[in-house]
Image (cartoon, rainbow, N blue to C red; front, side):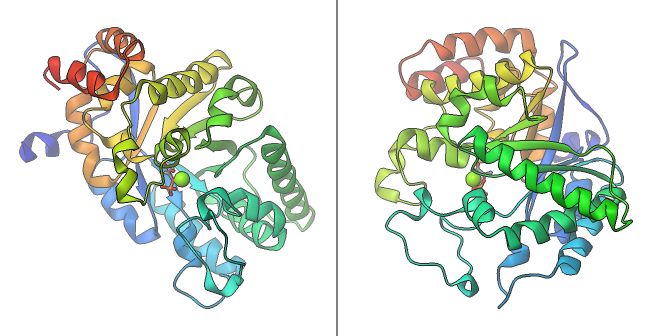
Length: 322
Ligand code: PEP
Ligand code: MG
């Protein structure tokens, strides 16, 4: 099997009925890029920039960040790289920010909420990203967007920094796609409105499932509620993908679900454009996808959307030998 996967390393991911999907990788540091290329990744679908900020005693400077982003972009040689702006808070803390303890950190001051408040931090990161943009195919994505207002505000800050750099005579890429993570049910439900303003969506199922089921993703005692195959989750995913396509935009997924062999047939059927996963899952996923027909998986997904429970959906996918 490993032999068969190896042969797929430089192949595109095309289904038996000729549909191309993109298989990308999630990374945390520039060192992860070698593994992405080695496993045939067609891009980076999620660069979690938190690690640049963690394990140190002060904020990383603009230059430290610029070097990291530039390295990733250069090593990816023009393949798409989706960089997510700082997603701190929740289970990821930065002691040097000295933020007050919260009752519900996952529902609190995190990610874009923190960045819009601490614009000094946000602007430094955006400047570093904009400067790095000339070294490859950069796409920028904001985490934990709950309202259109947040997206518009974040975008406005980005455009301001871009303008400043241009005035300083610093080169910035002309067109940088700008997207959001869909991790909060409000955003999935309102995806048709978001789709008019963003360039792409990336569904973060790790959080989307936690918030939809109201079950802490870290809490063992409620882990039975962590149900990727629950029809409610599949319906939200469908809403997001359909909304993006109606506006000529694309949707990826960078939560764990994207690399899950039980979920993959359903996601293909729902029309997902890009699957971003840990590098080691890419070749098995490619092998699986190239044996599937999207037309057939559309029928499978339609059945799943009409089911009552996650267990029934799993049974359905198993019944086709997946
Ligand atoms: C997600 O929520 O699915 C996601 C990819 O983000 P993280 O796991 O970093 O919260
Ligand atoms: Mg998340």
